[in-house]
Length: 559
Image 1 (cartoon, rainbow, N blue to C red):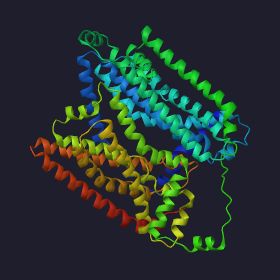
Image 2 (cartoon, rainbow, N blue to C red; image 1 turned 90 degrees about the vertical axis):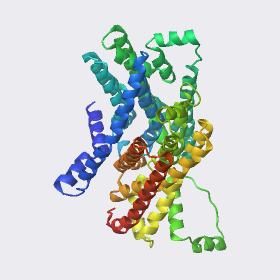
Image 3 (tube, rainbow, N blue to C red; image 1 turned 180 degrees about the horizontal axis):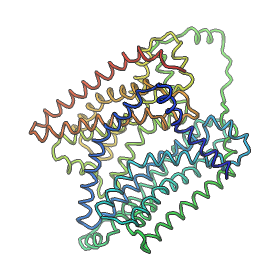
Image 4 (tube, rainbow, N blue to C red; image 1 turned 30 degrees about the vertical axis):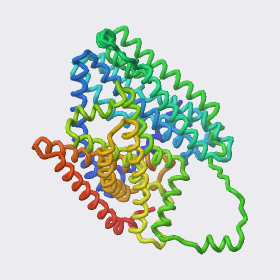
């Protein structure tokens, strides 16, 4: 046990690097810019927190009128666990099988489950931080509004600590089993990607099927009976993932018999799945690691003419750097899954959230209810497209993904501006894929009319330029070049977090700007013109600053 605790403590220190950050900022007086940037990030999230609280207030008020306020807890808990279940695949695969420290850990006198448990602990702590902003505000708001007592807050703390265990344990068991099978083939990278897609698709499909099966058409008498029960709506929302229902009843029930019973059920299932994960680790973990770093290639004899053609043929610098960036992304399964796949995954999640509602146009109806004027349907759809296209971490990890190989970018005879231009083109194409996928989702999945969707696409294409440039600026300012596994370059890269908050802050500012213009009586077409002009200015300034900043910063980066 002592060895295990020591291993977990070291893994957490390596993961967060707080001691190194403290040493560089406080002792060495380096990276002082981190302090004002952190303050700026905290300030930038205030509008988002304000908007989130206003949304919670509206949802709680509407649910309370029909006696279904507990559904707010179910929605928050389900959203948190669902995100962990889907996006945990990337994290678990990378931490378990692509960490560079595995070469040092495996020869040590440690059991396989101890090595895997240290990795799992790091993932667990990171997921606590991930779901904090999603789960904590609804629980706190519900507790305050319902004047909850000591029992509610005690159960809330216990459930928060247990919340990521079930989805992460499920993901870990599936990943360990998948990697044991993948390890038997020469095409490991391709099978990892295909296997991950299959598992993620299965999770999304089951969530959609269960949510749809839990929904039924209600006549007048059945509707009265439906709303007569305070549990009816939460059961419908949590039909796709029963643990969210158990957690809700444990919170609402407190120390009553029902509350304690559901808390015990939730904790018991968590412990059973956790134990199953340890058993899978002990029997399959090391077997899946054998040969994972091996690569296979085709033995092809080149003629002298073919060799001469390949060596002498060249590309323009921007084109060559672009294809180099493309290959770095596509040949690393973790980069591909976190970047390109996320651009397609977010629209699918939007569709599932909408289709799981009370009708096929739930999401568009929600837009119509909160925004009765067409201007907000266009701007709301554009915001969704920007989220689908730009919030995947591709641009904000552009330089970090090179890792220790960044020295090559410093010595090749290509100017920083040309390299940054090529990298920008690559990140923007990924954003474009997300925008296209989001547009398909709006048109075919949610039946948005072509005219507002076309306008939203135009807004998103312009805004994506600025958001991509901002992400690259943040990563260029302090790239994370020292990482133990490729997942850390994206998932555990604070540059990705800063970029996410900065871009969400920019969207929030534009949203408030549009709201105040509407309140001031400005015509809708005028608002669209002003917002489009603001996006153009934002994108022009950001891209210009990126090019100028690259001239100064590129050669200062230490590798």
